[in-house]
Structure formats: structure tokens, C-alpha cells
Figure 1 (cartoon, rainbow, N blue to C red):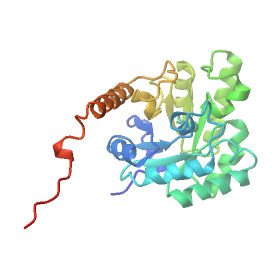
Figure 2: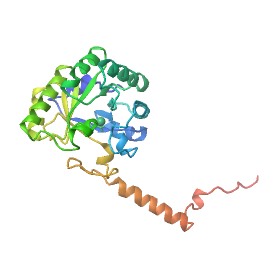
Figure 3: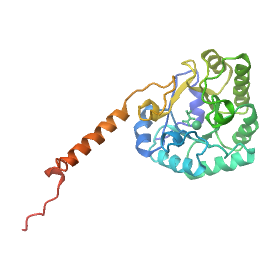
Length: 269
Ligand code: KIV
Ligand code: NA
């Protein structure tokens, strides 16, 4: 079975919504693959898997290990891996080197990077050299230390103008799609109408060409904080803590393991 390509994702624009989730491990990728067009190995893994406070500490090695894990679980979805903080902002050459390494070592279909006007030259450099680029504008978590925290964007004319220019710039540079994160609805709608890339919203209204959520958020597994845009489609944290509690109770009562879990010596012939 052939997987969806970045071009296939762009072609869905105006046809039907693009369904995307983050994935970090083989078993989760296997479960999501039949339902998703695109799986993003997001640097959100630093927070949801590794307990970091922000995504700033995530390394290329971490992204490669999880990218490889996800690729082992996928038959159909397009797989994009995030370039982590510090692995691409220095120069377009650094960005290409990192992107090429990640694509070679994981077999993924392209990379995602955060940024607008300041990254447009880098996006064009990568795309013209064979790296499909997924952009990311609006709220950019890798810039949390300079942008004043995790606040929604586009409330003032000045901020909206900047995001509009960012989106246009990476669209013109050839991004096949772009995440719009934490951005007010009218602006997300306007950008979606103005760019040829597929816009994938997270906290950016139903007007986008598709949606993405952090899987641990939507599964109710990561509950350290819950942005307004997260919907819990399950409450896995409750399911897991109940399972751990039941296990502990049975071990203490010696009711687990039962006879059906226990090996006896086979009778001699
Ligand atoms: O790292 C991530 O999970 C992301 C998505 C929220 C778009 O960048
Ligand atoms: Na990310």
C-alpha cells in the first residue's frame, strides 16, 4: 500500500478536511494510521513524553528515534517530523543538513519548521532541494521564551498583519501545508483562502483546510494543562490509573497472578 505524499495533502485543499494527529510511538501510529491523512512526529513529545516544560530542549536524536518508531507503524498516512529548536534557525544550510539527516534516518516524507518571513528563504532552499516543508505560523511554541508565553494570537491589527505576512511568505516559498496554531478565527479563515498550501489548524477554528491535535491531549492522557482548543475524545489517564490501582490491589491481596497465569511442572510421561 502506498502512503499519502505531501502533494496528496495539498491536493485535499478544497476537497475534504485533512485529518492529522501527532504520533510518537509504533503502537500509537498503528492505531491512528487507518484514520489519519497525516501523522506529525511533533516536538511536543518533549512535553508529553519526557516531562519537559517547553519544546526548547528537544534534540534531533529524540526526533529521529521517535520518527523511526512511527514509520514502523504506518501504511497509509503521510509522516512529517518536526525540526527541533536550534537545528535549523541558524542558516538555510543548517536546516537542509538537519532535514536531510532526519529524512534519511527515518524514511519520513518531509519536515516541519516554525516561522514566517524570517524562515521563507530557508523554506525555499529546502523545497528546491527535495525536502517537502510543512510550515507553522501563529503561536510558535519554540519561541515561547521571546513571544510572551502560550497566548492566542491575532487579536491586534499589528499581530494579525504579522501572521498574515508570515503565512504568505512561507506559502510563496513553497510549503506544502502549514500549521496555524492558536489564532483567531477570522484571520485563520482569511489565510486559508489566500494561500495555496493546506492550512492545518490547532486552536485556529474549523475554517482551516484540516485539523491537528496533540494525541496525548485529545486522549486525555496529558493533563498538566489544557488549552481551550483541546477536546478530550477519551479519558485515558483515568483508565490507566484505575488499571494501576486494580493491579496494586490484586498483588497485595495475592489474587494476581491466578492459576491461569501460573506455570506448573508438566506431569512426567
Ligand atoms: O509539536 C507538535 O505537536 C506540533 C503540533 C501541535 C502542530 O507542532
Ligand atoms: Na511542534
